[in-house]
Length: 150
Image 1 (cartoon, one colour):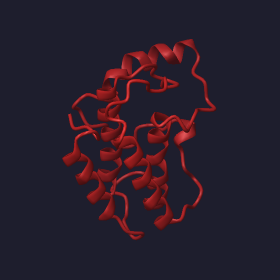
Image 2 (cartoon, rainbow, N blue to C red):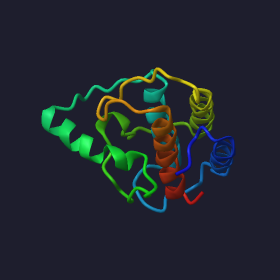
Image 3 (cartoon, helix red, strand yellow):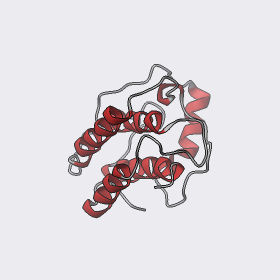
Image 4 (cartoon, one colour):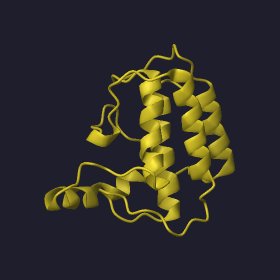
């Protein structure tokens, strides 16, 4: 599994983002490209310690999330049209140029944390190691870049 902490992988992701333009169309899903760029910032902002969830999972949800946690960072790609948690849904119109730049900035901040030992606790999945954070964030952004054919 690739990780955003690998410099080559990080550079490839930045190039894939650069290949997007405001006319990029999704292969699946309902978000437009600017909404997707905003959506991809949100899990990175959780890892960067700047975003918390309004939705708090109950005991039953925590058990379900514990079962699915390894799928967040394993080698198997995510399926198309998987459900999105409420705090990551983007339904309003977003400005493409600003969202593209902001995603690159948030990615850069995350990429510099490759030696971080003090990650925030994920609100649904709990603790992740640095390796797991890097793989999970790569897997998420790769999923959405594939959604837009890049």
